[in-house]
Structures are given as structure tokens and as C-alpha cells.
Amino acid sequence: EDELISEQEWAGKETAVVICDMWNMHWCKDATKRVGELIPRMNATVDALRRIGAIIIHAPSGVTESPPLRDHKARARAKAAPHFPTPVKLSTRTRWGYPWCWPDENTEGPLPIDEADDGCFCEPKPCFNAEPWTNQHPGLKIPSADDQGDSDSDYISDDGQQVFNILRHRGIKTVLLMGVHLNMCVLGRPFGVRQLLRLGFSVAVVRDLTDTMYSPKVHPFVSHFEGTKRVVRHVETYLCPTTTSAHLLMELRKLSTARTGGGGEGIKDGGDKSPLHVKPFRFEGQTEDP
Image (cartoon, rainbow, N blue to C red; front, top):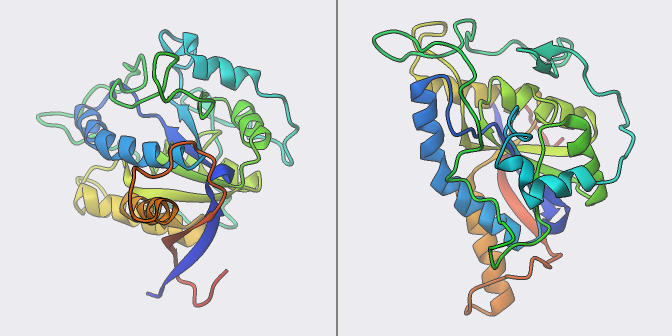
């Protein structure tokens, strides 16, 4: 199996982070626990990207119009973004009653894990599948008017058209996806990988800031974390490259050091326009740069 690690160049102010479905509670207890484990590293990565001019779109599906998110300045900012016509029609198909961008069988192979059981392997029996979430995870930072660092960098939206409006309005070219779950919502939501690719954006998944709903009790009968790795390979093979928070933070530290001559606290004003070199962006099964 060939693996190509390539280096791509992108600029902070042309970059968006979309944080998918990081709810305060998931219907699966183990999934809720794993989401909580992602929060500290996600905050550190998002804070660093925000400082170099990236915008952050918080997309906790189904709760953006519930308090306290509906009253947040970032929600009003999302609603105020001017309308832009999409280059292709947004998917109108659904899953679980929500808009969903299903795979194109001509270009994307089947997922390497079985998700028919919804992926819960809690003991002594799987959790009841419902919708207990009421908010984004409280540990995930959204700057507010009371924060010294509040700016126009953050938005709250789970609507595909609205997210497209924000991205076009801000001149975004590259979108970094993080959040849960990679085999489901990160790929299929109207702001997820498949839809953003079809809309013409350059997309990458931050592979250590995601998770899957996969149970080792079903095919391919591997550990949960091995199952997640296999979904990451699927994404790299058929959809888009991936990177890691470690590499992003390393490159951002290099940029900060270069701007301060090795001292100080780095970039604070979000105005840096220099490109960043980010690797590894991995494309499985390819022998040359795309």
C-alpha cells in the first residue's frame, strides 16, 4: 500500500475550521466520554488557528437555535452573512431527519467498518439511541463579548447554505474539519467533507481530533481505534487529505517564532497573511502529487 505525504501551502486568513457535532452529551455514554477527551487539544489547536486569522464555525447539529447558542454573538454573525448562490445544488436527501450528503458510489468506495448497529459497545448493553444533546460541549471555547479576545472570527451554524455563505463572504479557500463522528456526520452533514468538496473547497480532516461510531463486535472485528484508523484511510483514499493537531501546532509555532524573532508571545492580531506549509496531508494509493 503506497502512501504519499505531500506539503500543501495555505494562508491563515483563507482558512476555516468547521467543528462538527461536539455536543454536551451523546446518546452513547462511551462516545460522550471520548468527545470530552478531545476538548483540551481541540481548544489549543483552534486557539492557535484563530490567532493567525482563521475563522471557526461551530456546527453542533440541532441545537444552534436553542439557548444559549441562539443568543450568542457568533450565531447572529452567522445569520447576518450575505447570501451566495452555491455552484452546485446542496443535497436535499436526509438521514435521521436531517439533510445529508450521501456518498457518490462512482467515486467513493464503501466504508471499511460496519455501522449498522450505530457503533455503541457500552456494557452491559448498548445505550438507547436518542437525541439527548442540548448544547455544544461546554468545554469548547466560543469567544463572547465578555472575552478580551472576542473578534469576528467565530460563527455558529449547522445549516449548509449558511455555512457556504460564511465561507464565501470571508474568502475561504481551505476548510479543516474536526469533531465527530468521522464515519457519519463529519462526512455526511451539509457542512461536512462530501458537501464542501462538491462546493469546490480544499478540505482536510484533522485526524486526531475526530472519532468514529464503531463497535468491535461487528465487521471488521478490530478495536475501536483500529476501526477509526481504517475510516481515516478511507477518507484519504477517496475524499481528502488529513493532517494532525501536532503538525498544525508545530507549524504555527514556527510561524510565530519567525514573526517575533524567537521571542515574545507570537501573533495576536490575526492579521498574518503568510502561507503555512502543512504536512502530512496523506493520499493513500497514489504515486504522485495530485
